[in-house]
Amino acid sequence: MKPYLYLSLMPESLVASHLAPAEFGAYLATGNQKRARGQALFFKLTDAYAEQFLKAKSLAPTLERPEGTSRRSDYLAVYRVLEQTPLEALESLHLTTHDGRVLDLKPGAFKVDPGPRFHLYQEFCPVTPRVVSELNPQEFAATITDTTKDVSMPAIVFAELKLNRLGDDPEAAGVDNLPYPNIEHLRDCLRELRSKPGKQTKTVIRYLHQDVLFRTLLGGFFVGKTGGGFLHFPMPSREDLESIYYPWWRSAQSSFVD
Image 1 (tube, rainbow, N blue to C red):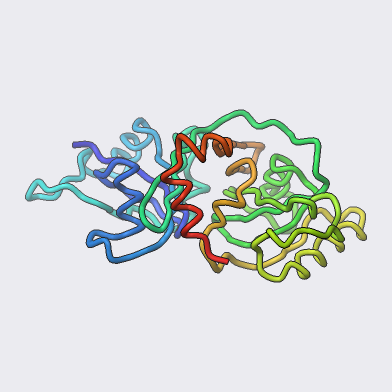
Image 2 (tube, rainbow, N blue to C red):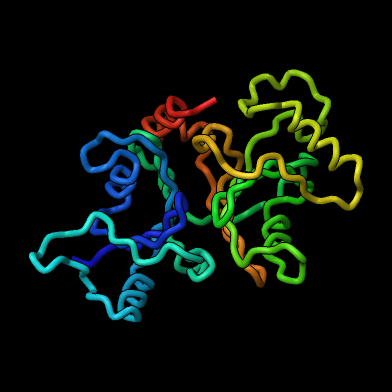
């Protein structure tokens, strides 16, 4: 039995497993004995890339143990995995809730939204700050992976989060439904962008320290690589989340941490 190859984002690692994506996500989230609880984000890599990778590493193509049993997880790399994985190998992205429900996202076309003025981005790999920016997702990815700049990364995975009315006006009222900690600090970061022409980004928090804000996702997830590489993994519509994907959506909201 040939294994699947996964690029996990939390933490960054390359993992081989005989479990299919839904089973692998449940295993990461709840563990073998169903006693653990934790979210997971991971890419399934293409079968062609998996076969090529295992062959290049002189690993058995089935990865079965000598006694013939399958493997739930076999960690093959834990360092600079994202930057070494070609974009064309990223077949699908899987979002796993704390109780092991998995939503599958496929790459899709990216369309620039003409508004709002400001964006809120949560980075997931290889670093995890949350930042506000005047750049749209494609521009943000290109800027972060531009090696001519003093600070850059060879690759990045991030998602856009909702700002609602703050996306146009840092002084906007009626934003109590935004579940982010310290809204006034978020306002201050947006004010700084507004008051300093030429400043494109501002860090809001330095690292992710709570569960993924699934219900605040806006548009989906993005992958950028040096040289202009860019992928968009769009989220389903709210209508589809509340119907087709309702079990995942209900779990995503119940696992939300304020």
